[in-house]
Image 1: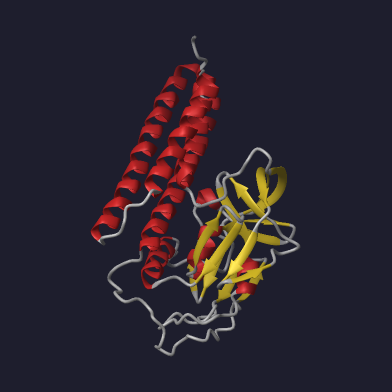
Image 2: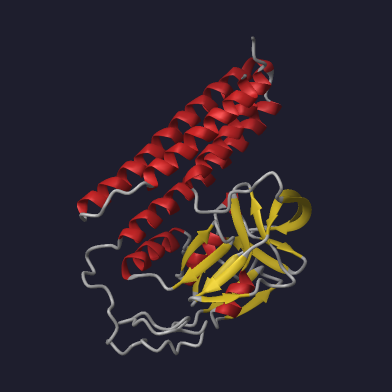
Length: 330
């Protein structure tokens, strides 16, 4: 059967958007998820944290909906230097203090968004109204081991494979301060360094969000990390999950870009975008395998059990690819 060019490119785009999500820690949205088309205000905003200026990537700009500013959940975790994990089974976002090795990772990612010599006296870009189609997620939150109700006047969203959360909710739960300048489109935050209780010598005592009075905080009597140079097994797996989530974002962005260019290109140039799409799929495959290989190498290096994470990631990846090829190329 001869395939139409459009169906081939659609398949490439869908594969890039969906297959890489097999390794993501973000919510896997089902057919029953609540999909909506919303009108939001999008812009490149200044995020000023403890005097330093950060910006999201162009592909994942913040947006305002019903007076709430939404940002990618990973971007929020970097700004607040908090470790974020998605509990798929319980539909819960878990936010906690990072270990020493996790903190280093967060700070490295955070610095990638640092903008030197930013002019915060004016907006970074013009704001614009856009209609976006996304899935809303019924989500629970757990900050520093304590379950917290989701904000009643805000929602958690999955847009193009990225989870967006209301940033003010994070500041409230971490006892940080936040202010918004509507003229310069700037959000200024002062972080509470003891959010959730200090982790310097962190003991096993309970903590309250943002109060800084965790019972093991700062006493030096907690168990801490026996060997700071040896990362915990969970942190190695979590770091791999983070890489796969970032790969999902990069691949989906590439897919949408190629598909949009394909639609507007003359017939003589359409084959070029098909070739680019197939090459992009191969590139995503290679990067996926590289991330899994690096995870297993790290586990072996530190004498940890390999476990079945790689097998699960790979199976979900391959199953999704096979399903999409069958649906669109069968």
